Image 1 (cartoon, one colour):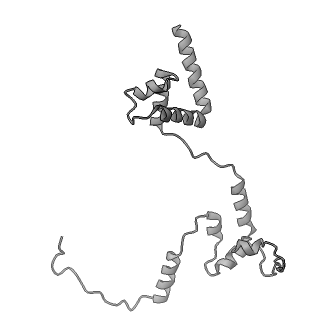
Image 2 (tube, rainbow, N blue to C red):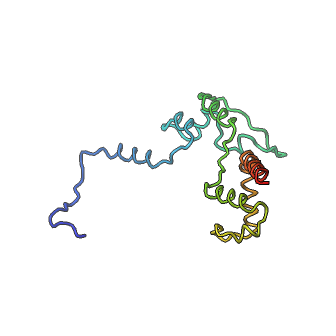
Image 3 (cartoon, helix red, strand yellow):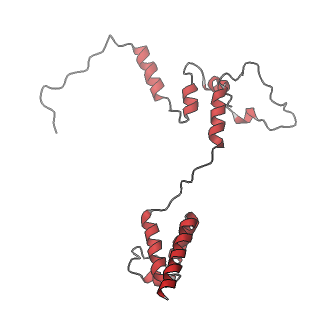
Length: 174
C-alpha cells in the first residue's frame, strides 16, 4: 500500500550520537555468539581470542598445542606468559564432557502404533502386513520388517513386554 501523503520525513544527521560507542557496540553485537556457556561467561571482550583461550587453558591452534614430532622440529616450549588464570572453565568443560550422552533417537508415536498394530494382527507375516489396509504408505514387506526391527532395537524392554502380552492372549484364546 502507498504511504499517506506528508508522513515521510527526510533523514537528518544526529549530531548528539556518540559514533565511536555506537560502532563498538555494533561490532560486539555482530561478533558470533559463543555457544558454550562456560567459555562465554569467562570471555573478556578487551582481549584477543588467543589471550582468552590461553587464560582458560585452551588451545587456539591444536597443531601447536600438541605438535607432531618431526625430525628437525623441537618440541613446543611452554611460555611463561601462558599461565592459566581461569582453570574453572577447563574444569567445567571436563565435567560436562564426562557426563553420559543422552539418547536423542526416538521413534514417532505413529510409527510405534503402526508397528504394534501390524504385529498384533499379522504376527510375522510381512506379506499380509503389506496388503493390510492400514499400510497407508504402501510399504513393501522388507520395509515393514525393517521398521519392526528398528522398533525392537530402540525399545527392547517395551518390545519384550508387548510380545509377552501377545503370547498371553494367544494362550487365552487356545
